[in-house]
Image (cartoon, rainbow, N blue to C red; front, side, top):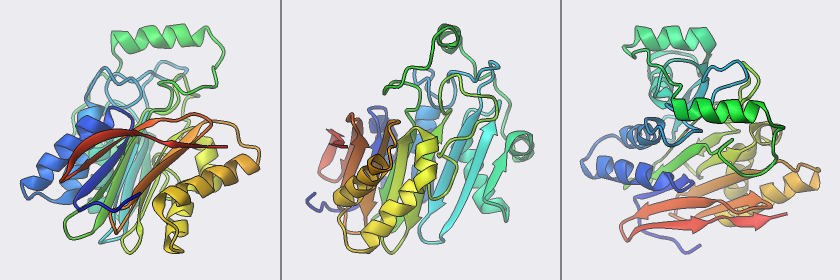
Length: 288
């Protein structure tokens, strides 16, 4: 992919476009790039029409919405994450507090909720009628192994004007997942990874498969070897396929030069780009 001028923002799925716009506006106001990542993802988390992220998500088998999120800063090489977080609509914001206010990386369950409340976050009812209807329908069906709203994580990678890289991701995970199940999104190296000397990656899709390969970390390591982002993503998808992995996954990647790419297994997914030249929705390269 031809290099573009920075800043540059890349994010997963069609709803990533509105996340990019808010992130870009935040950057142009001179705010911290981490603010841009957080506020961009917040827009998707607060949207009840997105049933795989934040407020309005489809709940787990027990009828509870449990959210996962992570954020990572290239300049500091620090990260924060939360998993199985209930009653908080913006888990990416809690993840940032974990990164900035604790010596931990990942807080889960009741501990994550207690931390959020202590830091000023308010309890909200995350389950909407729309999500409840989908939950009831899915509970009476076998899991369908295809790309749908089961695992449409919002992942966002940002290259700022100083060529520093940041990333964040947020999700409710698989619809009607087992209570307590945690996917790749809050796992550093799986759901996302940043090395400020190289680039950043975010993942979407079936978290179990992504975790088994440390997918985001592996793509960054491919880029460290001088492989462009697109080819770096392709190689990891092909490696997964060679091991017999069949569950759907996708990755977006961005390097320090402003080059980017995206790849997925068997079926494409849309991802959003925003830079000085404008914004666009593109399709991932399909690898098998």
